[in-house]
Length: 191
Image 1 (cartoon, rainbow, N blue to C red):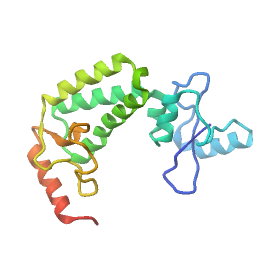
Image 2 (image 1 turned 90 degrees about the horizontal axis):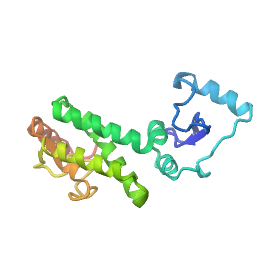
Image 3 (image 1 turned 120 degrees about the vertical axis):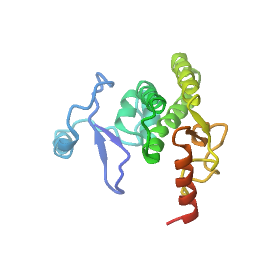
């Protein structure tokens, strides 16, 4: 069992991780997770704590960052797949809600962080595919007139226009409406 960062303070969260085949999905459905985890702990199954390092530095980086179990398991493969899906959705014009768009856009930030962490060890194919997808995406975007498209909780100081260009651009088909949303959120101020 692999300990991951828990959303609830003071609680421990785990995923079942097949060390013989780390790409394989966890063996149990999340609904039964607590009961199975308890039985596994009682049976003395090895628990890799948050303080213990994994053998795979990419998975370790993802785990320490508190990313999802899918990201921990799939690393580059999972993130590039999510980025491809995102770009296809933007190109097809299916994004209507800014919150969903921003959530999915976060996979680009994760992908960039993992490429940066891996350095020279990052697969050149991943870098090339990321670049190709970025070019496709940019053809459907326009610069945001409100700066960073995050709401008031994330100001333009959080992101760099050069490094995080994707947070400073919007799909042309929804830019006007989303810029109005961002302005309204910023006028309201912190809750």
